[in-house]
Image 1 (cartoon, rainbow, N blue to C red):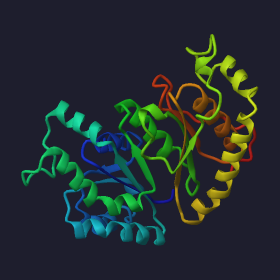
Image 2 (image 1 turned 90 degrees about the horizontal axis):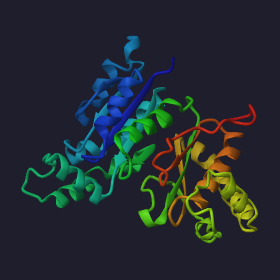
Image 3 (image 1 turned 120 degrees about the vertical axis):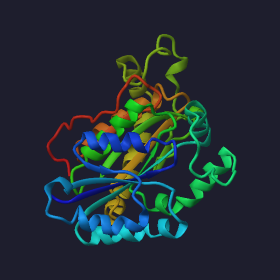
Length: 302
């Protein structure tokens, strides 16, 4: 089994502990709050050892390090990969409003507020401090609208199901009225298409229902948009692979994230599942629908 190291970082209150607990449930050997200065030594004594228990290791890395120490993380990730270790860097984030709400609910003290900064100022300071980690991250997960269960499922689908050496692609539908997902690599706007919301009998349905699917399939602008998005992504995917990117998140939005974006995401994701391994779908506007992987209609995924 190839050596695999997952580094989990992120903003305080974004869900790093939940992510590490999920990885532990997935049989990763997990250690939280490793000082950045000790990462190389830790890897030498664990991941590089002959002990099988360390073949799948995850470490938590937060902002309680100096700026100089955090700045060394991207170079260390590159060094580990060059030495043959499958190293992945995950970063969890959330909007300021979501973080403020979570700290208010738990009444926890923000780790960056020790110098009498207010909570909002502490969050801004942490964002700035961790920016080198964000820039080097393979996968950024915006947890603003994710509950604990949804975050666990996201970690399971994106990390555990990713075939070694293959690109993990997530297609996500969303509603612009709720904000653009902060973890998207590419964002496409479907609001120019006719809206089933205004059609009698379709308002209460979603883009997964047969009547909505039939309605959108008959709209002249839908197929060209699908083709345009598909053509664009197929041209970009080789670039992601060439730069050793391990994750790609594609977001498609409409007004409410209920009809048009849901239909487009499922249609495009199904086409990609036929040609690529590790394709997943998440509907942020349909909280009752868990993240899932569309079954490939052929066995030619690469």
